Length: 187
Image 1 (tube, rainbow, N blue to C red):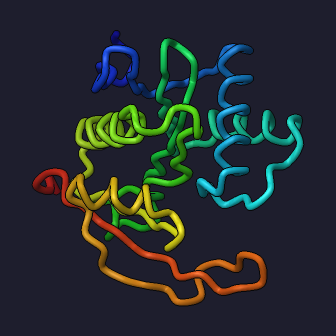
Image 2 (tube, rainbow, N blue to C red; image 1 turned 135 degrees about the horizontal axis):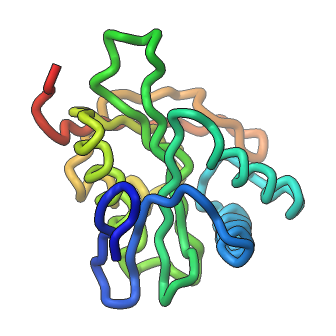
């Protein structure tokens, strides 16, 4: 499958990831469902309890129209099963224009263990290289053990810890910061 940003990434015959620039009504419903399920299961993404469906739909529509923000989704048999975003560095941060940020990565519980997370990261890395980025960065809560293992297995290096990263159930949770060089800088 070809997308506007390049080929999709397939790691399993029924699982692939792609960069999307619009969501059909069915896709919007799928991404909201997957996101709500991931939040309920503690899969990260910032929310601890899912907002109502109208708020979630508004959020995803907003992601698509924000300049410098790119949405990547994974699909199992055509159904959106996970997502992540790539945020480009703003022009006023000229010294950091070589890097971009991965954020909001999640996979619905029903789709875990099939390669969705890895397919999304591979699609983001391909897109970022095409856009001329040489470094990707991200941050994760210490409770996101599956995501930590995924990024570690894909060559991301933890470079820092924030002991006061998040508050969950009245308890401070650490945050881990990761980076990966994906190509030599063209700058």
